Image 1 (cartoon, helix red, strand yellow):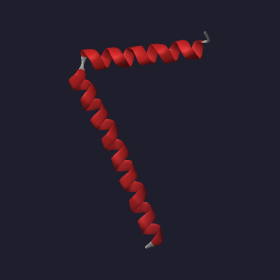
Image 2 (cartoon, rainbow, N blue to C red):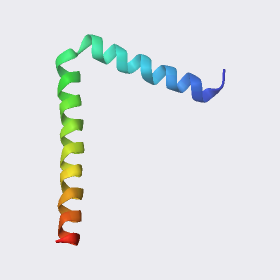
Image 3 (cartoon, rainbow, N blue to C red):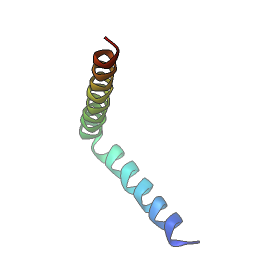
Length: 53
């Protein structure tokens, strides 16, 4: 096994541990990330509309 696979497995294990032990915190983290992605998409749409308007 190379180091990259070991690190990836460790990260996945930590994420699963956090998800199982802190489900509310995990849900809040996911909602926060999705909010950032939505805001970024809205900013890009606004920019493109401004360019072509």
